Length: 97
Length: 433
Image 1: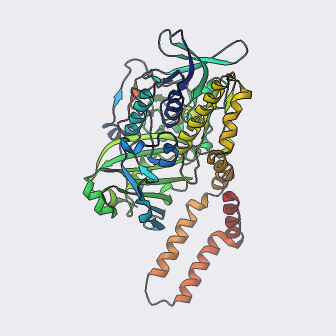
Image 2: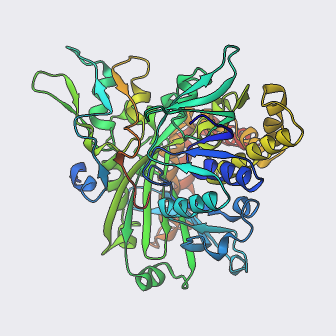
Image 3: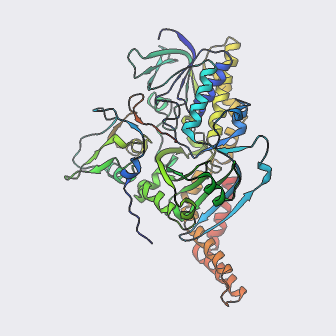
């Protein structure tokens, strides 16, 4: 099967966002070892917002967030993240949806 | 705001717009609160518009609603790695004066619907997020708190139309948080092509449209489906699977979409396109079991927030608009009769849903989520078996036909065993009955 390499950031490039500077709407609770649920977010966030740090923790850069809610649902049982919608008017603004 | 509205509607998607419109049209004092910059800015859908549901709200919507193409052909494809097996239905009967289904562009359609809501007299406030319900001492909902300063507003009834995540309802204890096995994550792209290219590629006329629904190995063993819809000058292409499957399989959603786009049956359909948006959204997939309590003292819940989606037929927006309308009609009737917005009165909303296709269809397919979840081979073994069977019969290579038939039967029986095949038929029949 042919290899498929895609960069999610390139897909987000043409999207329209109103970034709420300095006010991330999602945060990861401090931890030493991420839970399995938290670690899985690195792969399954459709906007690729989650990544591993050099020391093995999971961090989030929510600028490209599509506000789907997947991460909140996956981590609901383990309480790894604090999830809210961005302030009114901020975040992703779909041109087509 | 110190005035008390007749109703507050949280959200300006299809269900919220339907609800606010019907109430405002009846002369009620309605406040609708939307967190996005404009109605539609936070919404994602395929999208297919079911005219019947909208006709019962705005009978002459076709005059100025932004409609892409009316659907004349449905293709159902089961994809294997290199092939697809499927069926088409195309009918000129769909070229009628008031077509039954259209493709639409969600954000643009919502903007139009929102304008209608304003014209009907509702006060629509955007860029404002409702953070929680306000209750009185007895636990009755009397208003909402928002993220604006002095952002408390009051109403006789609050209708929650805030979509699949239903945060207001779950954070106020009205419903439980959505579970990963009751919701699908779908990703989609908008591919732009010249109108005439789309028409010649899909064999359609100027306003005609095609819908392609796909299942099979494109979801790499996960429970899910993919789609391709023709708009006037664009093609909507997307794929989604249960969140629990994504987590278990550790597959990147964007990768899944890319794999689908590169399938030999799909790639030529998108050739030469310009991608202008990448979106992701959750779709309720829990069926009837996932539907929460729908009404209470001072509140009701409609649309995706109530998890109203028929996964088999991919119907959600008609359920959204219909439930919004039925909730509105319940409020209007209660107001007319001078009754308070309490459970014993608002129960009429649930009764109306039970009498409609909304709860009737969800009831019919209540067993399907579990059947699919427990029978993932429907998405792996069967696409492969069907594809191999078709190829075996269609390749003319000197092998006699009886031997070919034996080969096919053997493949089915060795993959699924006779007991498994019978079980599959039984389970599927039960789920659809």
